[in-house]
Length: 369
Image 1 (tube, rainbow, N blue to C red):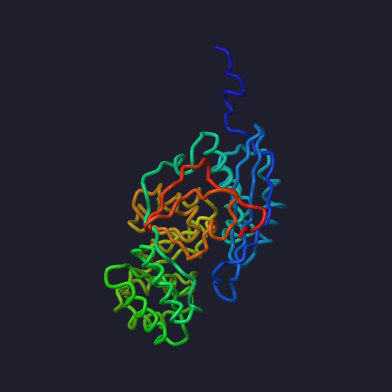
Image 2: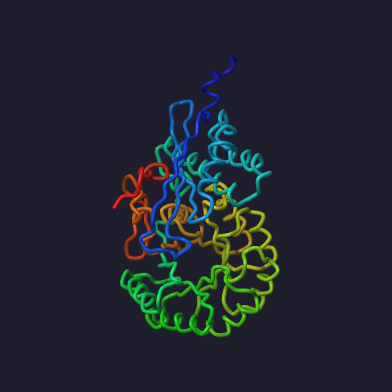
């Protein structure tokens, strides 16, 4: 029997290049003086069969130029010549970059490669990334979210009224004012607008220590909270283990955990009820899927963090229904940085696909609108 032709054996193309560009976009609703804009590092991978995959990395504040430099000077030369398989490239790249840190800027940069490779693979098969991974949900519930700690009480109430008018059955607000009584007034006002049947989540963004968190729960738990998000510094596993043991409210965290090992540590320590991996911060679709399976085997709920055009597509591939976070006026489409239609549609507080190939979107050269 003659040996098969090389082309019939190697069906996966090889990477020939990686290009990047930085896109900075002002937010339509400022997230406060520390975060008036977001940064997207747009990526494109080229392959030896003439193919191209499109992805991105993202950071709201810190390190966009550092991420771009990692991609340009360390990642691009390393991945050149590798087979364009997302999972094998991810594993090789994580091992290569680990000297610079196991997570953080390294995994944020890696996401730009991983997303572009999944986009490429889906386009080669003529489907969306959701279709390639296997769509399990027809739609996903969207919850209204806001970076709104700097809002006045009147502005916060008005935002909540907009969410109710839009049909949201769940919303999330920020807490962490210097005086817990002010937090209590704000949460009570939001609950009054929502009524008793809608879900209300609160997010302290690491502003408290453990004693302060317990004091806050004594005051805020009576408002029927769906979860308390990241009240303590995300690195403090010891404190979260104690908090969850005594908290009357489910504890959610994960937007500032960057590797499956850290998620494993929190899950095994019984320190969390709900994990919230940010698909970019963990390094892309490849590690996100692994983290989801880890959570499933431990009966931990998964609620993806931010980026609804990406998180929403992955939410539809999960075995259990989840909530998709939509920060008011902060989606890529609303920020005017998509070169075409969005890959997802929001209607009646539900998210569905628009059935575009690959990741389903590319970015403009500059913000529009």
